[in-house]
Image (cartoon, rainbow, N blue to C red):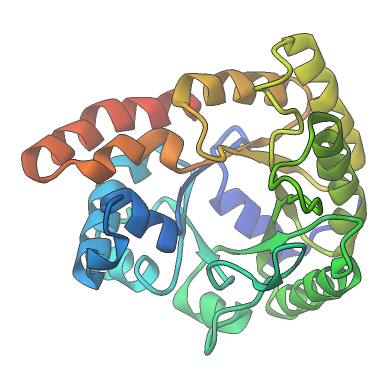
Length: 295
C-alpha cells in the first residue's frame, strides 16, 4: 500500500463521511442528461435547462452525500456560485470529455479542451475524476494505461486526489454487450491493470451481470475478487440500474470490501422528466431519501 501525501489524504477526507465511507452524488452527465431531460428531442435541451436541473438536484440532495461529482461545462462554477453546493460537502471535478474517440472496439478517452488537473485544483476541487473506456484485450489498452499514468502524474504534482472511473465494453462484432463471464473477467482484470498506475480511488462497475446471475452469493464472491484485484479503495458506480437493485448491490459490495458508492441516475432520474413544483417536491422527498439511505 503506497503512502498518501497530505494533499491526497485531505482530499479523501473531504470527499468521505466522518466514518470514512464515500457516498458521491454523481451529476457530471452531459449528453446523457440531455437525453434524460427530453428523450424524444435531446437537442431541444438548452444550456439554461442543464444549469437549472443541476442546481435543483445539487441544492436538494448534496447535503445527504459526502461529495458531489460535477463537470466544468454545466456544473462546477454554476453550483458553486449559486450556493446550491454546500461548503461542507466535498467537490470532485470531472476531467473527461463526454463520449470517446476512436472506434467502438478501440475506444480512447480525452480530457476536455482547455481544462485539466491544475485548473480543477485552482477552482477548489477536493479531487478529480477521469473516466476511461477499457478492455484489457483492446488494441488501445496500452494507450489507455499510459493516459491514466499521465493524469496520475499530474495529480501527484498538484497533490490532489484522483478518482479513476472505468467502463468496460465488448470487442465482439455481433453484440455490444459483454457476455456474463467476460464481464466479470474484464472488470476484475481492469482493476488489476489500472489501479497500480497512480489513482487513489477506483470507481468500478458491479462485476456481475445481474440479469443473468441472480444468486447473491455469486455477487458477493465477485465483489470480493474485485477487492483483492484493486490495490486502492474502490467505490461502486450505479450504471443506471433501479434504485432498490443498486442499494442491494451496494450492501453486498461494501460487505465484501468496497469503500462506498457513486450514484447518479439511480437517485434522481425520475425528476428529469418532471417540471416545476413536481420536480422540486420529488427531489426534496424521494430523491433525498434515496441519497440518505445510500449514505
